[in-house]
Length: 301
Image (cartoon, rainbow, N blue to C red; front, side):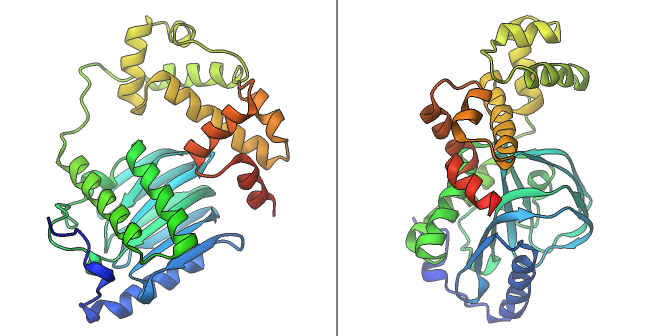
């Protein structure tokens, strides 16, 4: 099988160099003081991590395919790019993707994120991803464990070894293959209507008041006025997550807020429903991509 990326990040299309570099500078400019940015030679691939300030205005995506992973708390996002609208809460562990050349408007509250920008000049012909027909992918949040894990791993690789290694290329190939797979799937259909907005809000408020306690699916279902199995199907249809994964995401969002307020890791673990701070730290790293202490140190620096 031929590699999905041109070996060694060959940028044979030199006509793309200028817009690629301009787009890379634009991406770098958006990262706040305490963020980090790593680019491959010529800006063919760029990885950023940082807290982006609130934004409301026009967007003009350059020649890169852009992938964003929320890694702390949640942000409210409403954007319309090339006629495709995406609106909702961008939660920790969730991916947003925008295609090369996209233009439109966006409004987003402050967000902690890992961002990945890949130039089409890097892509071979076997990735199976229709870069000109990505409206379906750009129009939804992707709560996909593989995408989140690989994006997090690519950030770690770039910070240590740079954004032009064989490992980095392989990781990008995995992302493209997964997006191609998601793009070929029909719209999610669970055979069960999604949980209504009112019921989701009611359950969310109940859970938020008891994040430090043991919360069962039966309890959440009762708050929604449903049986456990029906609630599980409806919640998955609404959020893409089963109840305990959804609960963990809410706990990590709250944990991020408490760490940002200066609480100790042990205090946050207890407040998030973990008797063992080690298990809390492992769950936090899986969801956010950093240990609680490292995340807090960077956030408060």
